[in-house]
Image 1 (cartoon, helix red, strand yellow):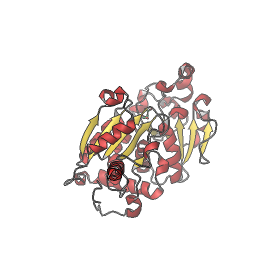
Image 2 (image 1 turned 45 degrees about the vertical axis):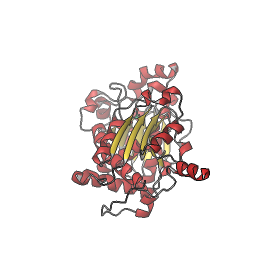
Image 3 (image 1 turned 90 degrees about the horizontal axis):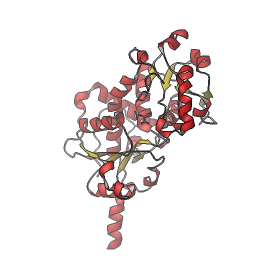
Image 4 (image 1 turned 30 degrees about the horizontal axis):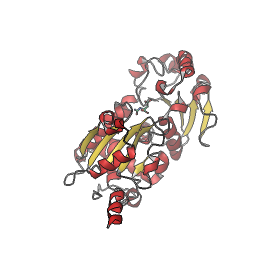
Length: 336
Ligand code: NCD
């Protein structure tokens, strides 16, 4: 079902928002107008929480299907869904027929026939949503797929960054840590340069890609050398679950070279915001003193996640894509 566009009386590029993808897998699925539209909408939700219940007559059904652990992403999608007035289903993948060997494809077709309009999927498998783009069983949002992408995290991070610094042009952000295993890092490397922000990926060489992913990104293994020229720090969690043994050996030296501590900040005379998508390995990527300090933006990111995800869910439910769920109609027509 396509839900009516609620006019929020804001300067959205409606044509672009109507063309919003039905499967949001990666930042590259979005154009700059659509991203700016999401930022406007998220701000609107943040400033006017009483206007948030968009879906009153027809209440779409949104499901979370998390095949990997999550606290922040799963809960914030659930809260965003209910704040908008949608109905929410917590699809428990662990106790579902996926565990009997049913494919995700068949599972999603089944949920679509039951009336689910939108499903947020998290999986340890990269590119798991790609195969649904041609004929989506329902609207789909990537809640993090393996080491590939986590587009909604990057979008809420952008929203939070813009609250700190409205003009990112020429600013430099250091993304520090386990860059090759981080889907958040990958999404940020695509998104932030669209707003003129330069990205420097930092970490031990084992945690860095061999080549920068695009021309707006550089690589460095020397945090202390670069720190003086950086405007924002974005620390990544060490992805222990994606490491072989040799990866975990690196962690012993990690905090000495890359851990963000108040001592390190003071040594460089730095007074800049520090982001982390969470969960933090406290004492490794950043220490408790930083988390308790005003530099730490992690809780702001968590708060803003609700508004950005409300914006994404609303826009997606209102797009004009007639191909969604058409697998079933096509099947019935071919029988007649
Ligand atoms: C991130 C994830 O799951 O990719 N966390 C999150 O969604 N807030 C980052 C991480 O787990 O390291």
